[in-house]
Amino acid sequence: MSKKMDETIRFSVSLPKGLLKEMDRRSVNKGYSSRSEFVRDLVREKIVEDEWGKSSKSVIGVLTIVYNHHQRSTATKLMDLQHHTYVNVLCSTHVHLDHEHCLEAIIIKGKGNEIESLATQIGGIRGVKLANLSRASSLEL
Image (cartoon, rainbow, N blue to C red; front, side, top):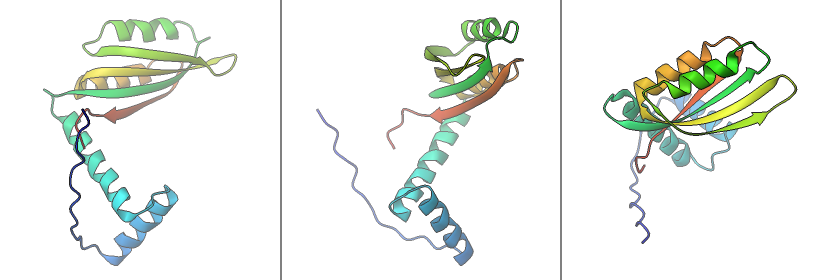
């Protein structure tokens, strides 16, 4: 059974000229086909951000990390944190980038503040070069 697409409603927005020029510049640079697509993505991002702020809501995130696997105990600390946290690590993918560095993409489900706490803790581990959290939501937007 397929879901029916929401009806699209047109509305107008008034913006200062400089802000409109900047929006157009950014939408072109990011490859959007129209202002509407750009604005829809901005609205979705804000709604997801607000969902993450509600501590009772379960949300999904992808934590991408790059670390030096030769750094003493980094991998062990990463694994321990993932096993001893209040969020659900749904799965992870491990990629060898070069002789020293690995990339992991960890898909996490839980309360937004707990996921962000885990991301901060992982980012603070010695040997972690990058920790980037992408926020998502299962809301139909």
